[in-house]
Image (cartoon, rainbow, N blue to C red; front, side, top):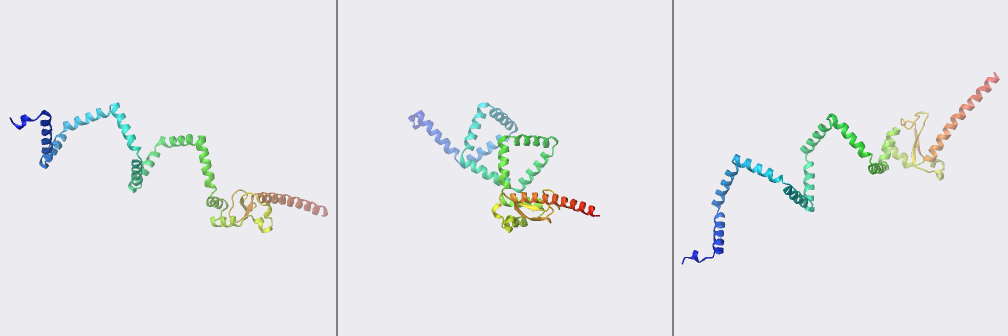
Length: 244
């Protein structure tokens, strides 16, 4: 009785499997199989058949759902998120990518209907109550920064930022006249309204910084002086006319 005949079907199956594995692991067999597979998959009809099958397979609802679930699970992993974020930061920092994105955005915004569409979207977005509140809070924080306030005042009064900072550092000019006990409110840049009548100044007629209270008081005092001067001038003219 031969050795093969004495083996059970399970043993023959296992031996056959081991022989096939040993044969397939040989380098020459691997290379020959690889060449055959490459030649087979390079045939036009095989390529067309695989494309058609893949399109039909990936269009199935259950396959789409399974792929979406796998992707969501993978992209939810912290290490994958960090890897994607790092790659995106490196990719968008490339000069050629920046130039391409800028050119595309410029070309997109230059389309006839895009400007109006973007403007409408922006207006609709900015009209939301929560967006309005967020913009208002952010603007208030921005304008409250000392350097921004100095820039705005410098532009309004025709001065340099350094000059404005020096005036504000001195404080209310009323302190020079021992009137510091009545200062109140934030500081304003005072200028001669006889030279520049309005909120802006040429820079040459700026007189100093005053607190809100003294700034208002000075404005009323100047207007009363103007009225009193006209009144006295008219009275003096009447007296001179009566003498003659």
